Amino acid sequence: MDLATARRVLDALVAFPTVSRDSNLPLIDWVEAFLGGHGIATVRIPAPCGTKAQLYATTGPEVAGGTVLSGHSDVVPVDGQPWTTDPWRVVERDGRLYGRGTCDMKGFVALAIAALVAARQAPLKRPLALALSCDEEVGCMAVIDLVRAMTGALPRPAAVIVGEPTSMRVVTGHKGGAGLAVHLRGHEVHSSLLHQGVSAIMEGARLIDWANARNAENAARPPGPLAAAFVPPWTTLHVGRIEGGTAHNITARDCRFFIEVRAVPGEAVEEWVARFEAEAATLSAKMAAVHIDARITIERAFAVPALVPEDRGAAETLARRITGDNGTHVVSYGTEAGQFQAVGHSTVVCGPGDIAQAHQPDEFLTVAEFEAGWRFMEGVIADLAR
Image (cartoon, rainbow, N blue to C red):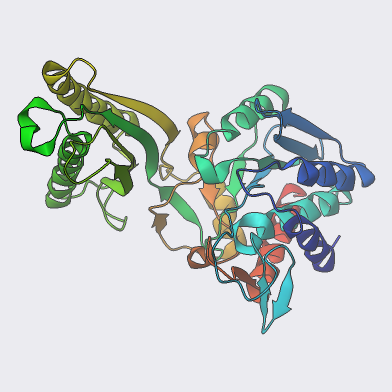
């Protein structure tokens, strides 16, 4: 296996339109068949929905101390985006590989698959594993089942490399995250009788204003040592979309919005969720005092643990040795890395591509980054053969 093979694998992966709302089973079938054709067995972890699956595969001796290459199979939609190429076909032009997922993150997955096959021919002293998840783009929750399955079946790895696009820089920390779907049920009356009704929109505005106040407080506090490197170096709460109401002169019966929390390491996401839920419960009681049907309900959509920088962690040491990157890098977006670290695995984020290209029309991965990714894989294999 070589770089050319990795490129052929990338062509195959991008051709599967694995948008998170749709099935990824055709891609999983292909990966299983490809690895099986090279004598590498895979273990499939079916998703509860029945239309998706995750898998892991390993090669080398069944001993502790190996390396896991972690990536996700799903991509974001292309609906409404002004693509100038077919998003489901890799188009190489001007040193770039265009296609949905080339950057985020089928480029890394293709390299990891090719590396697994190449490693089969190497004199490994420790194993190399692939972890391929689903539904990362909708909350990083499905990977929990994959992590548990691998933890229960494989010898403990020394390092996990999550290959999100970092321009091959070694990212040792990221914020934790949570998403909450909020529904306020009000009571409709004519707006001239405002005091007799409950406006779901106006009450929802109180919750959003509470979030604004917390943002201001967080920004005003001096950042702690774990937070200082982030941009911004504080926990943020954000509402990106809100809907509700019937007419301008009727108190709104319904209001729905989605709030996300991005917590810096050192602050627990669950504590922020609990604070928001407590504020909502207090407001809900006041609404119910006006009308018995008025209330607030909250559905937890996702919760992603932070990736906390480790003190001389094995994953960081490995990635720095291979890339030569000795800088300090943290990011404010979330990844599946925190899920691996949560069960005690040394974990970093390091992969080809620029995160600025993720989710964009005409998404691309440069050929140079793809090649750098392959050199990284060669370094991983060489390390495992030492």
